[in-house]
Amino acid sequence: MKRQKLIHGLILFLIAVSMHVSGQLNPSPPVQAIPRFQFVTLEGKPFTDMDLPKGTLLFIMYFDPDCDHCQHAIKKIGEQYGTFKKTKMFLVSMDDAKKTRQFMTTYGRQLVGKNNVTILVDQQQQFIVKFNPIRPPSMFLFSREKKLLEYEDNPESVFRLVNTINKNVQ
Image 1 (cartoon, helix red, strand yellow):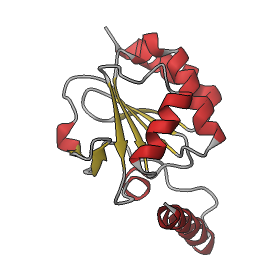
Image 2 (image 1 turned 90 degrees about the vertical axis):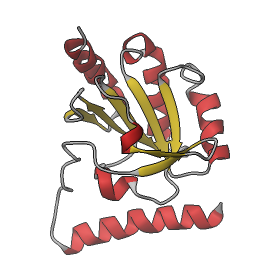
Image 3 (image 1 turned 135 degrees about the vertical axis):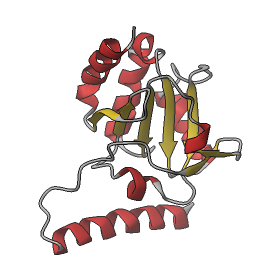
Image 4 (image 1 turned 180 degrees about the vertical axis):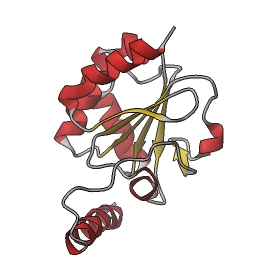
């Protein structure tokens, strides 16, 4: 657990240092289409981009269970579940399954057990490199064609995601 936290912190530190050294004031924008990836379910089964359903809006959220903003965001999403149920939701954490479950039962209990919600663990620390989030919580809404419709990383902007979902659901 401590080793994983250390690695997670080191990755974030190296990204910040590399951005500073390269002179970038703003990080690169988030991905514009879903990249190839491999995560695992809470049960330890592999889950890749090939397992994503076709023909539906896809909501992918990267979160850190210790992040106050992430906790606030998942609560707001739970409060807006009536809209988010129109998507397939994939919630991704780099923390272990136990800590991720605890986060969900504490802050995301309105989403636990829902048919359209899949909770994933990023054991290989791929998310940051492949999705290029700006900061957690990183909330991506992708079209049926797996193209980015909306990116938000502010819990107070969940309403924008709700509006975009409603505009794109028939």
